[in-house]
Amino acid sequence: MIARPDFESSGYTLVELLVVLALLASVFIPIYSLYQSTLSVEFTAIDQSQAGAYAQDALEAIYAIYKDDWSVIADGSYYLALNQGGQYWELEKVVDDQAPSVDVLPLRKGFFRQILIRSVWRDAEGRIYLEDADDRLPDNLTKLVTVTVSWGANKSKQVVLNTYISEI
Image: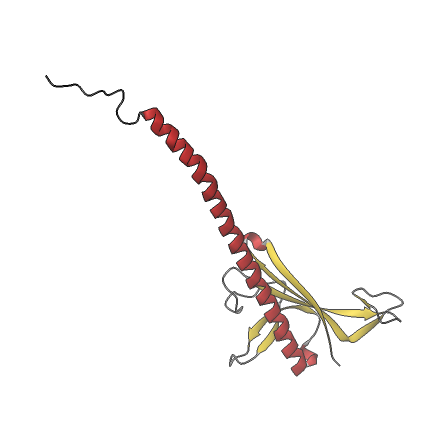
């Protein structure tokens, strides 16, 4: 006589398989979430580092420009452009608050750089102010330079560097 297999004691039941799958999911879903968070933080750090480098690059270019010709450092909003031969930087004034075309900016896609140059005033003790007042005199040999690099959705993320430059 042929023996019948005992189906009740052989293999895994569907319930056991579902329990194992649930346990595996409860372990792997948090690990995957942590992995995604780590990637997001890494990409954010890379973008911030790149934006900081673009801002520092602009400050270095402005330093070279004003060392060559202080007279081009005037109040206004600017962007950097290479001259026709591509040998040196030039400040190009933003006209009517219109951003330049991306072709002019030597930045990675999605990054925008703006340079703001402002006059400063000094009081009798030599302290610098950004607004005029009765006891302050304009300092024609010093300017405040603000470089802003923006990126992200609606340029919502940004790095801002400020420095004073002087003709000595």
